[in-house]
Image 1: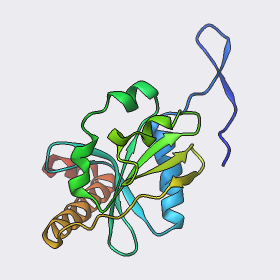
Image 2 (image 1 turned 45 degrees about the horizontal axis):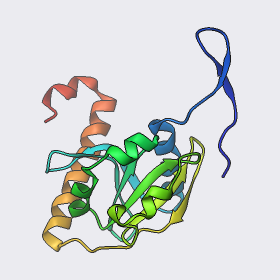
Image 3 (image 1 turned 60 degrees about the vertical axis):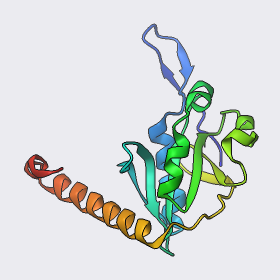
Length: 168
């Protein structure tokens, strides 16, 4: 995987490297996962009040959460990410190719449990697989139903925006 190297003019007319954003990282991860029969929803609210950047289901029914970080300060300043672990079987960090991944090897980031995916707007690569921690059956059922309903709701609203008035 190579990071796209193109430039965009700035307001003052100078050229600058187009910095990766969370949307392009999510797109690359979605492409990788789609090829591997893992389907994700972006911005999935969790019952604890948090919101997963990507949450999906693989072909075996395991729930996957990806937390996307595009800057070192964003990565180091996030103290809420452990709150996601109770809602997934596997947890990944999604990062742009140029971001320093060294902090993710520290004990505080649970490298024995959390995987790393590097992505750009075109593709992604798993650098460290996430170890699976099986959810309880009742939690899995609840989360699968929430994912299904969110997916259906988003599809219906995309087809008919007037339905958004009834979305909870």
